[in-house]
Length: 601
Image (cartoon, rainbow, N blue to C red; front, side):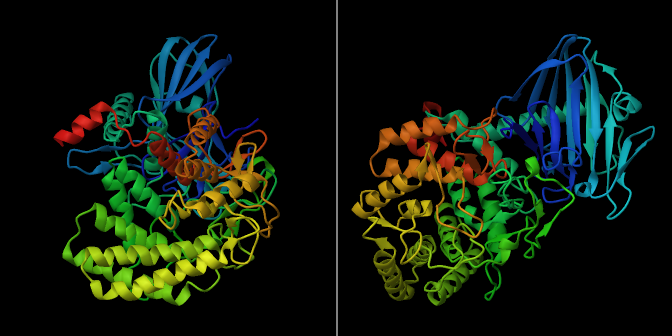
């Protein structure tokens, strides 16, 4: 069974997915959202890949270097042992800036014997739309497009270039390297330089991991998830991608295949909350600035998602020449969901602004800017909260009065009131308090089903939805509220199957969902813990984290029966929820070392 057995390496500019056999099957250059260089993930025959294989056969194992995003694939062959240390360079230079080139380095570490390898270097630029030509000269191997949009990449190596490009056997008797770059290198590339970049990158990740708050329980799972989130953070703008891939299907053979290489605002408040608790204020603050910059105009329409450089138009198109992951067509790039109206976005944004005031020191000028944005959003909420929308799940064919969207409109006003109190802008509090109460009353009356004894997916409906489990997390209801307790039990009864959760079961224009949505399983665990079912929550969490891939990574979805990973990968939201629940179950209990550092810091 193919279980998305991939590791991810990256440096804040792009990321590569490398299989448990050591093949680079997904890599876009020069940025996360650029066209692919290798895309065997989406078409084994046409997509292109970059493998290093043992000629005699090998037992292959894979792990991450301790507390880092350097991936080690170990080959124990009949004729010797070697390892591939895959990484994208990332470290601070002497002038304080970061060195994050659009480069992938495959450092081949000789261990023993004389293992024979072959390099299968098969780039297919521009999503493999046209043929890619390989040119070998004395300094590098150049790959370039032959038709269509011009693109090229460069390969540098310590090994014989003809043997590398021609897939000829090479005997490994010392450390070697292969470097792929989007750019032509100005300096000669040597094994010494590759080794130095490896060590500097290792030190960078060790330092980053060391700054991450440590808990008494689930520390390894929390740290690996935090390292994934860091990899999905785009250095230039501070945006955090939903995932590193496009078009990995929610269910094999179906058409729910979307491009996730964008920044969804919905993830924002959770990202900021989690990363600040983990001690990574810089990542959180840069992400916050990215969002604030998008909202600078008073009449700026708020989108649910943006490109990683703040692009507003994310035109969706299909790449019909690619077969798709396990023949799951279509392969899409771009995402038409950017046009959708989702009223929950207002609550997310004001929650983010409230966290900013709460967690960071802001200048008077910045505070005034944020206060203007807050007032504008609440004006928009006042105008729109009674209108239907597409909801959190971006249902393309229906608009409804979704309960979660209404709750998040309440959140917008509630956090607006808290911000007004912080800034002593008391003249707004009375009117906003009336609006908050009005929205809450409306939800309590229209979203509640006597028949189901639960808050439902939308007004005047009997359909249940996992998103209502978040009513407690956003402070709309307390965990001990009888109606919330009853809702949790009803949602669990109806949407849980084989220990995993459906988002919902009703028709959404694409047929009934047939895979579990990983984040919803984490939401259920959180909700059970909050209503007092702590033992059950603990058991479910222990079970769920067993279903990660071999490196502790999660995608968006999971097959109910086989538990194989499905959907885009690795998914930020799944790892955010994992950290959130792990910290909750750990009781927020820090290690003794963290307590000491906290006392002397």
